[in-house]
Image (cartoon, rainbow, N blue to C red; front, side, top):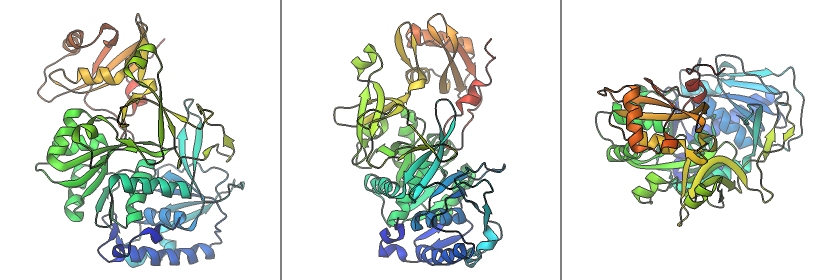
Length: 476
């Protein structure tokens, strides 16, 4: 992996730091800690041939352990730290859990016994994966657990693609309030920042007050966020503050929210990717505002995109399912025993279905319209949830709309619109339904409209749609 060899010499100065707000170390400290960690693992008889399971959080101990395993070429599974004990696959020999307990100063990081908990897996069954593999959990359409497999070399190349597109440099100070155990936080934010030797602030469970305090202490000029946190920052921050760059990924962002953010905080770009592919496309700070707002930018270096229309009307619009050919994408899937699983929807020429709808502009920029399962056929036509949401959010008094399919209707699949109102709004479901007849085609008008106070969110910043639907009455 040799990330530290990529760090420019200027970044080995004391001011180039890695911090979590409690502990701070320089990149030179990192190199020294790695030497001591090698001795510690050797004493514990943990070999480079052992596949490990690392439970990770946005903390300095976790980041150092994660980076060390990549640097030295260990195969390991990356997991979130949770209150309940994690289920460790049989091909992982040891479980590693870094903690911030018993760490009062930087010198304590060399006392590995006090903060790095290592447990042997009693169910261990070795596999031959060739080494230098990163495993990350995901799930298929059936919900069956599986793991994505990446080679360390491809992860590095993916990260360097992000460095180039986002124009990251050793002088940057990068705030990362998104989880390291997701590909966005790891492959688009953390590893590219490490590769250039930028100063990095890792934030665990960031809320508005905590973020603003860390912003004051760390003074970042680059931030990686979710669209929902951008919205929180617009509402909660009392004054403008200029960033060199803010990157967002995950769910979509409204055009007026994008504009308000840029007016207050500077350049905003979207990044599109997946656990399997890493970064697929991203905007550039050099792009015009309209391009950055309406698209996720150009495909990354070496990445090819194909659009496959799902219907005649979609074909006329140039809209279809996004397929991706990525030179630095994943190696494949494995099950909990480490055995290969054949990828779904793989084309003979190596293109992989992203299960998203999108459109390629003539100049090559990619528009992402939402998940394929976030569209339905009604009255014989494809109806996109994103179109309904965008138009309903134009209704005065409505702040946010999320549309889901639920049950059946006379037009085909049933549609439910969950609406969050503005503070001063005085609307009910009947008012909203009446307005829909003026702005939507009949086939796109939701069958049910529910007013809710907040949206349930997942740790990665996306909407928890299963929890959202759970409030609806059970179908018979």
